[in-house]
Amino acid sequence: MFFGSVEKPPRLSEFELEVPEELIADHPTKKRDQCNLMVLDRKKETIEHKKFVDIIDYLNKGDVLVMNNTRVYPARLYAFKDKSEAKVEVFLLRELSGDLWEAMVKPARKVRIGNKLIFGDGVECDVIDNTVSGGRVLRFEYDVDSLYPFIDKQGLSPLPPYIKRESTPQDKKSYQTVYASERGSVAAPTAGLHFSETLLKKIEKKGVNIVYITLHIGLGTFRPILVEDLTRHHMDSEYYDIPIETASIINEAKKKKKKVWTVGTSTNRALETVVVSGFEITPKKGWTDKFIYPPYKFKMCDRLITNFHQPKSTLMMLVSAFSSKDIILDAYQEAIKKKYKFYSYGDAMLLLSLIHI
Image (tube, rainbow, N blue to C red; front, side):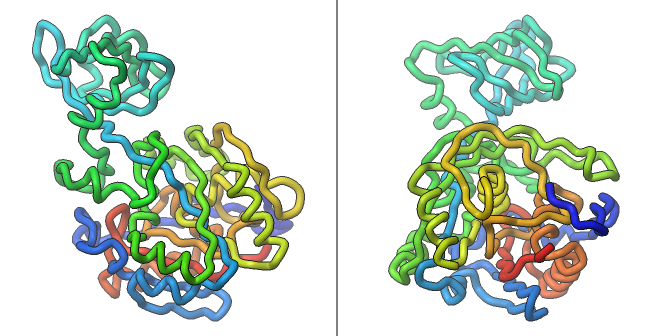
């Protein structure tokens, strides 16, 4: 974390903002690249209102567009308790090893160590432990080689809690980027949802280098910050992978003074995690709990594509660190005035210039 000699981190309450409920998107736009796009240029002190497809006009030959290729799996399952037949929601968080999974369960108070949960299709599990975050460790039993085909068939997309409707089969496609390839997330890298295959082809044709990293987004992305002092908040660890080819292309672009664009806060956090001396990144894989909030000196990202996030969330903190808290809050007020849609299925924002501290 980099702090200036004078500036101190803002308090949590400084990120308070009232988002009208009717502006919280519960469905995506019919065409991915036709959502609204707010273009915020901190240096010029301008705001432009565009469509997402217009983002190609801001990209230049030799720029690098870095995207998170994580794939959301349908993590929400339903089971019945053995003997009582009470219905239980099981939200799979991550595979631990072999047949062991960490999960959240509802109603939690009625799911105890020693219980057996029956899913159907020959799949069941035993509750073998509790976790420090209130979850459960489950040991699955099944008749086939892998549990994943069952998850893909029976699981529902893990829509965020602010989307007040049931998940549908269509969400398995909508709540997924068109370039998703590496299974592991329980939340989508939502800035990437706006890219269509057609738009990506046009961007490549313009001479922009499109590269991929992986950061598997966990449930912690929705976990609220509970402390007023931001330095006391701890992020959940998430797995990341920066391939050799991606690191090489980004480092070469930096040497040539080309712009590095990050698609989403998850991509940004991954790159900032692996920065080495100067302005280079190293190819690496591991776990990161990096929490970025103002003031912060970004080393890799020159342009940031993001959504409109929940007030007081870790995502909003990162965006505010990039363009300043006051500018972001003003931009959000402008978005409310212009009836932009917010959160995961909402509209997008392009931040063209970052703070230099």
